[in-house]
Length: 84
Image (tube, rainbow, N blue to C red; front, top):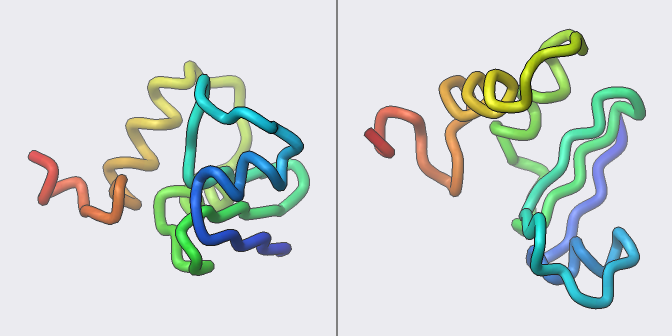
């Protein structure tokens, strides 16, 4: 697995070659096909995106994918239980 770590979502956008990173702004991306985790939180610890990498890749609706990753890995540095 390959990790790319930046200090912010803006720096992550620059890494992805976006001068302006507003639409689709994110602080992490899990690329299952390439076995790559990109983090804009300054750390490789990103449970939500890690879940995207370990769950087998199937054609599912994006809401199912995001919901499962949020349930098991949390979001915005909080667990699912803390968000409820």
